[in-house]
Length: 277
Image 1 (spheres, rainbow, N blue to C red):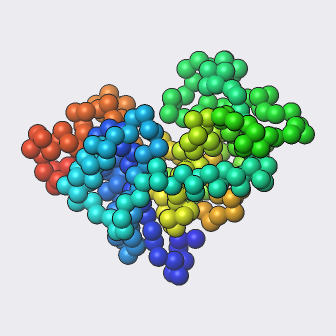
Image 2: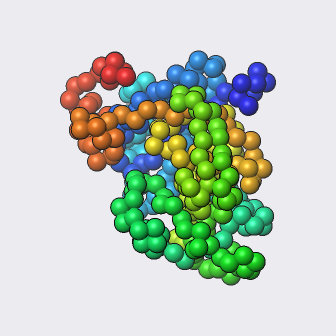
Image 3: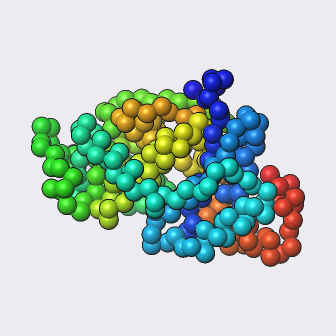
């Protein structure tokens, strides 16, 4: 546990270079830095650049420049997820060897049609995967090589209730196959899902507390299962309230008017931005 005096606090900033850094990201990163400094620990930078269709080198340069302008600092060289594919593949092989995953040929549209929810939930989150789409009990699971280019899903334990303590929101609980279902760990394009890559990185980087937005709260329950299946220690969690626009919608990278780069060009100072938090 991170509360142990024998473990040095290690936090991380994990921007995805698919657009310009906006106020929501910046505030979360500022909180992460404050918590690392208060604990006398270290803060690391990870470049979450697995979305090859949207990640661009100019966004990497811009995010680092904007974070420095805001006063954000990190120790150790930046690591990029695109350089770490062998680590993710090794974790996938371990999950396969221990029977936690199975190949999935269903599309998101298939899932939404099966649960009669064409517009269910947040598009950034996975819809509840129908149990009837799982392989039949006792079915032989092909090897990773035999399966070819296919999605792989983690089989969640039926009806298990998971809990964790969030350092901002307090006690949290969710039940597998009710609040979330079998989830993607590997995509047919040969890339890991966010859930798997995040767990592998946080474990390998020895992160003791994950600070991120409240929109990822449900992902935490999925990741708890991955930590357990892989036999790794679980970090602490602090989920930040989301920053919203004047219509109450959470900020996204389409909110160019609230991008840090835009605020800089308007003549705002870092202190003015901090004051809004």
